[in-house]
Length: 83
Image (cartoon, rainbow, N blue to C red; front, top):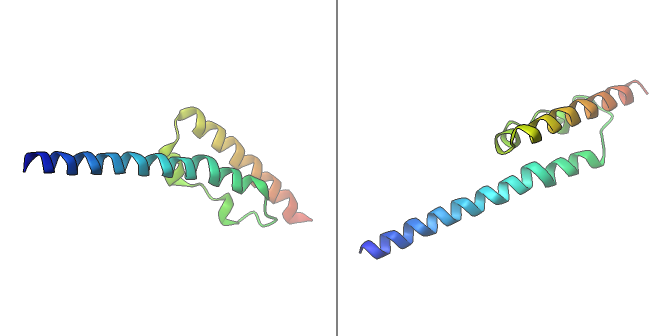
């Protein structure tokens, strides 16, 4: 019985680690690159909102880069909104 519990715990720990890695890959890299592909004309687009979940997966340098990029994209959208 103990071995079965240990295997179950190991399985769930491994599964959580894999899910963490996949979510980090999606939120921090793929989703951010997707949002940079096309900057909307509307400065109130959902793609220009701050993503709190993505921020929770980032380290300090990634957060700083994310904030700089977000401000840059918002400014571009704001300028396009006038056109």
